[in-house]
Image (cartoon, rainbow, N blue to C red):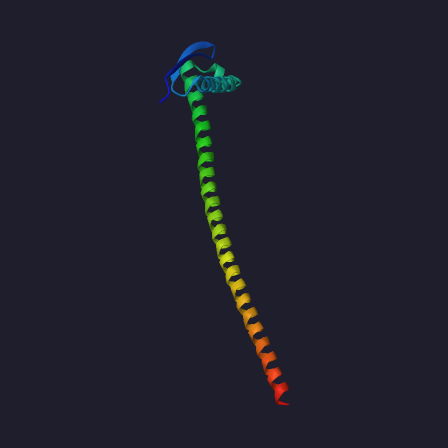
Length: 134
């Protein structure tokens, strides 16, 4: 397990200490994301007129919205991946079946060639016997 990291970050103009096992870059990215959401919310006049509690709730709702959209997108990708995996499996199966059919056809061709050669030898033998008998 990684060591726990404590780093100071600035969120909405105030310094906070974030702690976690994910690493400094990750924790800084979290703070940057929060600052981006706060800046996004501050573009609304309604947000700026709200008290701090409502601003926090609205910020949390915006972050939850991002989370659920990202989760839905990830879930859709998992379903797509599963579907593509099944399609790939089916295609591989079809290729194997085609290879088996090809090998079978090649064996039949070889057998027919052998039969043709045997019949040609028989024809030559019969013609040579016919020529002797005449």
